[in-house]
Structures are given as structure tokens and as C-alpha cells.
Image (cartoon, rainbow, N blue to C red; front, side, top):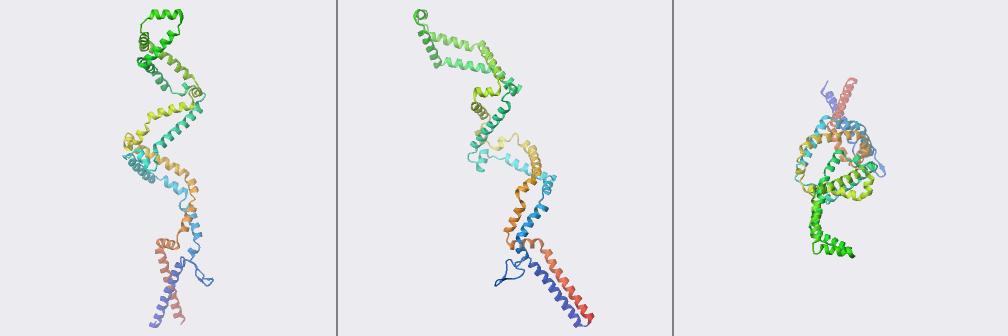
Length: 381
């Protein structure tokens, strides 16, 4: 083989490699370029715009379907949520965030203000009142025709019954305080005057002769206080109260509502709850102080349980949630907003090495064809 023949073969190999490599490179570029149609007059050049710009809407639609049907499927997401490693990671995250919250020196009202609730206290009190009203209606509907003693617990009835002597003493002490006051003394004096004036004729004259200048008001006041302070009186009042209490326990719940009225019962319940839960004090106390007794238990026990329950709940409803999210439409709309330049950049970023290999493969195939052609020419010559 002389040098001329060898040069011819090498030339054909180089030409074939250049043509093969350039052709593949041009084909890859034509996937994206040109970005817009090219016209000569009214005639649009073939293959303009590129394949992907021309069919971007279809690409976006197909990507959305592919993501929903093959990538983000309900089964894959459920499997992820129920994965032990994922559960542990979410538990650690929840514990860390909960511990951070419970360690905060901010008060609840400050947190509410930071979240945009300027009237947090009024809203919470309003919600609490609404909750009490709903709870009252539910309980009344359920127990309307049942005796009160069957609704209250035995422990509560016994506790209330044990308070009757204390209530009796309280009532009598209030009576003693009243009759010891100037108002009470004035009331007794007025009653005595009305009594004497009301007895006209012989009986009235006899009363005035017998009593004379005796301070009848003072005597009655002293006897009233003595009567009210007597232990026997206290027992008597306690017995009367207990009898009335037993009658009330035999009432049906609707009788209690008829006797006192729905609004009055609700207002009483709200006042009792308000005294138990001092909302202004609770809202102004730092979260760390409120949670100090429960912090460790909340972080170590409650957080893992909440994560597990939430994960199970979400896994069981993920298919419905995905349907409501319309992920295919979301992906399609997002891809449709991408510029062709960005799509090209994304594809090249992911597949640049493979596309280069396609170009090199074209050059290799072209060079191989050139070599075969050179050998064929040499043999035929």
C-alpha cells in the first residue's frame, strides 16, 4: 500500500468522522433549536422551531402524567411515610421543634400577636364560650329526660353533699353579719314600729304600757343573732338544705333548665370555668413556665405518638389528597411556564455526558464507514 492510498483512506476516515459527529451534534441541537419558527416570506422553514419547542405543551402534559403515574404514586408516598427511618427522622424533628416551643420565654399572647392575632384573648374566650354552649346543648339533648342524680358521678354528689354544713354555716354567718350591721338594725327597728303601729286599740295600748321605754329593737337584734349563731339552727338549716338538694337530684335535666333558664345556667358555667382558667393570667405567662411540669412527657411521649398518628392518617388519605392537588396539572402548568432555554439547560445539565457520547459515537461510526469505504475502494481498484 503506497502513501497516496493510505492518505486517501485516512482522508475518508476523517471526513466520515466529521460528518458523523456533526450530524449527531446537529440532530441534538435541533431538538431545541431554533426556539421559534423561521420564515422566508410566508414560507416556514422545515424543522423550525425545534422538536421540543414545537411540542412543549404535549411534553408538559406527558411529564405531568408520568410524574403522577410513575414517580409520585400514592403507593410510593405511603411507603415513604410508613418507612421506619422516615418516621424516626420526623419524630426527631417534631421533638426538636416541640422542645424549642416549650422552652420559649414568650407568652401565649405574644405568640398570638406574632402570628397576627391582635385580639387573641377575645378570640380564645369567644371560642371557649362557643365550646361551652355546644357542649351544654349536646349534654342537655342527651340527658334531658334523665334525673340529675343519674348524670352526676357518685363522687361529685358525695362531695357536694359534704359541703351542705359548710353552706349552712356560711348562710347563717351572712345573716349574723347583716343583723349586726346598721342596715340590719334599722330593718329590725322599722319592723318593730310597723308591728306596734299595726296593733291599734286596747292591744296597742297594752303593748306600749308593758314595753314602755324598753329598747325592743336591741332585744330582738340580740335574740336573732343568738338564734342564728346556735348550732341547732345550723343543723336545722343544713337539714332543710339537704332535703331540697335531694329534691333537686330527683329533677330531670329539663326541669333544671326550666327552673333557672338556659342562659342563666350557661352564664354560671362560664363564670365557673373563668374562675378555674384565669385566661388573662394564662395568656401572659411564659410558655416555658406553663409547660414546665409537662415538658419532658410532651416531648418524649406525645411527639412520637402524634407523628405516628399523623403519618398513618396521611398515608391512608394520600390518594384522595393527590387527587385534590391535581399534581398532573401542577406539573403541566409549571413546565408550560418554563422558557425553552431553561428546558434546554435542564436537559443538557442532566444528559450532557450522554449527549456528548452520542456525538462521539456518530464520529466513530462515520470514521468506521469512511474506513470501510477506503478498503472497498482499495479492493475494487
